[in-house]
Length: 334
Image 1: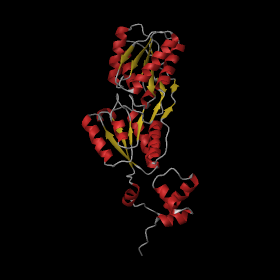
Image 2: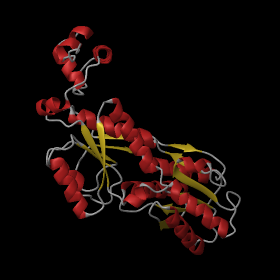
Image 3: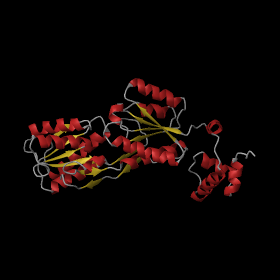
Image 4: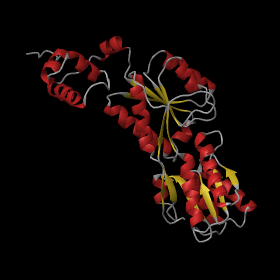
């Protein structure tokens, strides 16, 4: 005998709550107490209730899909840089827990940005997260101007003011330099990150501020957060500053290239040159020697991005900035 499909009313009776409460839980509203939310979830599981997605979309004007936009080349995103997989993992975990779908999109050209604008304007997603922005990227403010909920990873340079989730890059860089100063190093150079990205700009500012406090002179070479750029920048610094005794590198991936360049130049780490990175990626534990680095909570950045966007899309007021702390992880390279 065919069993009738459970309805919202069945779930409400089973959970001992109102139909409106069940509807709020099913539609992802955060304005439900945890006890009632859990009762509804339990009733849904026990009854085998399956929401009618088409009907929900018509009523709520929602797709239950959220986009993560990465303004990078696909080759960079899917390389050995562990930042992007970490952020995607955190976003996915949070959206999955909320029964939402992730849409991953690349936006490295004007044509791809226009395509994303059309996609979002057609309401194929309920909100957009943007990570790894370069310069005053026009996409986030354009999307927000269309009334689409937007949350960014790092603040948006320029006049636009959009909610963001980031880390205290300047303080993290200062922690690295202060550690090197305490160890007695006096010629501390840096391989900075790209200066069209907030992370690169702020980490360089933190390096300069800490050196200023110690009354030491700065020497800077700029990379692009890749291994090869780290090696090239380190060779440049060795040519310009042959007496250098320490280097702060603005990313672990660049630090891998720095270690390689130092080894080829006959400089021992940490005996001749101490090295501190930034990120604390998995790679940092397995370099030779293991890398002292500044840890940023990469997966947590993704989780917070998704959490903030879910709240914003549900009509809640959210904090304009969530700045997560960094910490120094001391290993054998410094």
